[in-house]
Length: 216
Image (tube, rainbow, N blue to C red; front, side, top):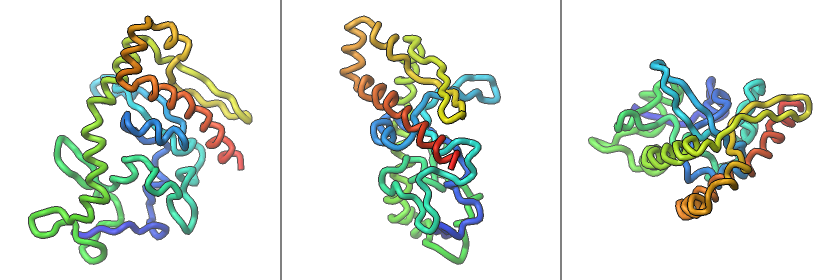
């Protein structure tokens, strides 16, 4: 089995499909410069609620793909892009390395070999799997952060109206945050939570970037 990114020749570019991607806690400060980073709650088939940190790559109505995708060039974020983008089409499932075989880049003829004998090709390990491992390792820390926000009742729903486009999302309520006891705020600071929260809040201005692109 071989793989190579087909870039502009890809018939189903991964940069066009998602409107958002889940991210790890340590990515928030970096990605907050480029995307709205919000808190979403997904419900699985058993009805369990799963809070996630998500970066919005585009508005759902915008069919041109990620806001940082440029025709003929590809992703303009390069090393700054989310771990989920860096790892694709490889990921970790139930503790094992896995591949999304719907990606047209897989082939028996073209590209680099995924396995070098009994081992993973070092190029794939360096360029893709390392980010899949980062996401997996950050999962517990991210879940604990989100659990704390909900337990403290800090997450509320917001609506933003800009250039006649209405956006609904969940974010931390800064007023509620500042009303927390001083010892709790001190704990938040020592854990790095305050830095994450304010990066998240500052990122919300990036909604305007997505809306302006939609209206072009």
